[in-house]
Image 1: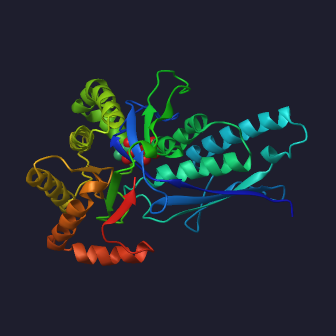
Image 2: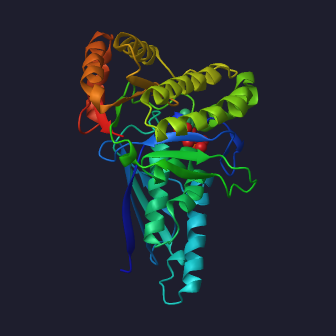
Image 3: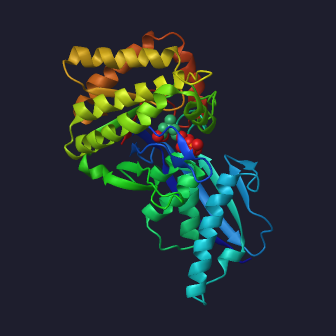
Amino acid sequence: MELYQATTTAPVNIAVIKYWGKRDAKLNLPTNSSLSVTLSQDDLRALTTASCSPTFTEDRLWLNGVEESVATSSRLTACIDNLRQLRAELEQENPSAPRLSTFKLHICSENNFPTAAGLASSAAGFAALVRAIADLYQLPQSAKDLSRIARQGSGSACRSLMGGYVSWEMGEADDGNDSLAEQVAPQSHWPEMRAAVLVVSAERKTVPSTAGMQATVATSALFRHRADVVVPERMSAMKRAIKEKDFEAFADLTMKDSNQFHAVCLDTSPPIFYLNDTSRACIRFVEELNRSAGKVIAAYTYDAGPNCVIYYTVENEEIVLGALKKCLANIDGWRERDAALAASLPEGFDSRTLDA
Ligand code: DP6
């Protein structure tokens, strides 16, 4: 059987300046730029195989072993159509290249972490899907070019096509041509950076990101101020903090931006609550840790869910993780959640440290 296949992995990224709000829902154009750190692939990643063959009769996708409809997902079809178009152009230029653009695709993707629990699963998933199909089609486009396509699958996915510290520049064009990811610095620029991911709950989020941000844009008065005034300033300050490897500035901006993102969620009508009591206990823990250290050595951040990511640098690893373990032992119900999670994450879970 004539079969072409490519397999790839894509990592999760955790935003330190949050994307929240679309100015164009169809093209997935954001109301503000954002910036994230791409985590190590060893711990949280999506693994995707794309194959195509003249014998396939329709485009099909399996996510964690369960088939999802491709035809009814405008996000999936937007990504696939764009990539197919690029392959068709390549085939026109190279008449001897196999006509892969005319074959149907089968895509198989697996996450090694809870899906849709506010752990950037759609980011890793769409980044891996776009990368796998681009590899299958042997497309010459750069990661930056492909980020334009991944963005249409899920906004945050455009940042997972690059390692290290990555910004998503919102752009101005109506067609989204300049709404792209850019690497601010590679991982090697600041190799001391670490992230601990605390999975407070592996359940699906209560309000999906897209619906949540649409509601925020429509109803929050705070939101406009955030998008127009606060985020542009923070983007510059965050890029500076990363360039200068200034952890205190990085941490301060990260925590403020997470808190403001959850504040605009609360300011949405009806209000959206992503944090729970355990999340809030982790915030108090980090604040107290920094106070007792006499300087900022750790920064918390939360996406659209209760799970906590704590950034710190390697020289403070023992202090941060040691204190964290002690604190978790005192949080009611943590052990039960911990045990429940061990079943869903193959490598078990304690406080998982990831090379950022
Ligand atoms: C809170 O990228 O999942 O994680 O574009 O609608 O798919 P869609 O949204 P998505 O939103 C992520 C929001 C966030 C912040 C961030 O990652 O920047």
